[in-house]
Amino acid sequence: MAKAVETQNLERVKSVRRVPQEEYYVPGHRTCQGCGPALCYKLVSKATGPDSIFLGPTGCMYVANTSYLCSPFAYPWMHTQITNAGAVASGVEAAYQVLIRKGKYKGKLPNIVVMGGDGGSIDIGLQAMSGMMYRGHDALFIMYDNESYANTGIQTSPMSPYGANTTFTPPGKAIPEGKVLFPKDAPQMVIGGHPAVKYVATASLAYPVDLINKVRKGLNVVGPTFIHIHCPCPKGWLFDADKTIEVAKLAIETGMWVNYEWEEGEYTYQHTPKEYTPVKEYMKTQERFSHLTDEHIAKMQAFIDAKLKAPGKPVPLPVTSPRESV
Amino acid sequence: MSKKKYCEKFSVPEHLTVPLGACIPAPVKEQRAMITGNWRTERPVIDHEKCNLCLNCFIFCPDSSWHLDEEEEKMVWNADFCKGCLLCVAECDVDCLDAENELNFKGGVVRLDKPY
Image (tube, rainbow over the protein chains, first blue to last red):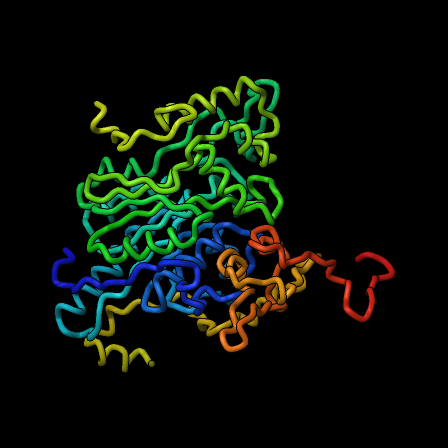
């Protein structure tokens, strides 16, 4: 579908010094103090530049940013329903392809970026996102993951970790651990089920230059791409506003979050620590895990060990994808 | 652009156009309609002599309140939009940033008679 368009070549950023100083997600928005998703939006905007179209499904970054007829976006931005972000992105891309083919639009295809929350991309908006990936539209789907439906009051979502205290899963006498279920694995879902996808990555706020480079790489690839970004949320996870980056770093050190890139079947891992710290250290920083007992934390540690395949040791590379292990 | 001109330019039949929902102007450098500087209770104060321009405050600020003045080679703070989350103080490489109470000033301390 995206054959006639020339590919662009956004250059890699080598250090923090080379990150562009211009802001396209300008100051003046209603997000909380120390907001992780807002920082994610800022870094992604720096990576894409002004020649882009952003689509925002309903979520924190729509509700808190575009209140009372003002918005902080210095590029074209459109609100979509929470269910149909992928479908709208498909439509925008297809319209540009037709206009370019008929010669009615002179210029390159703009960067089409969807900034979906975890609800808008992997829970409510899953079918539209999957449809976009299946049809092979040239758009980048970014999922900023704050592990809850935060703008309506921290309800549980499929990305909330085991044992999280949310409005829908409060700990009590009958269910002492809060959330009983384990979260979905979003990147593996995209990799395993969509043959048109050529590039999938996970990124973390603790390593902003790596995040910017992954976004640029995703935009350079022709066809649908998916990036999953870990965004700590001070209000939802209940920690102090100045600890957002600390929590993001700790998630990588404990193995709660793994940074990797998947490119046409090959995995490369970034920022793997030499030795993983116990997950208890990560859970201690957040109030939402404060009700858990040692038994529950052991269950969480077992889940992470299974995910990393090697407890307390570096990950043996490459980790087999679910398809290979069958 | 009026609807008629738009239809002529893109050669779209008029009965096929869809009315737009809401259009709002895009900001250029700052969104002055949403000043958030009055949220903070503590503000970061920079010591320019200690600062080694690691740019951690610039890259980690969710409100884009720090930027590098390239001519004078120092960091500039935007008081109108800083929400006072103090992420910059926590992430500074050389500890040149300090948190100070919002009501403390150089010439003295301002205190409100009663909290509001």
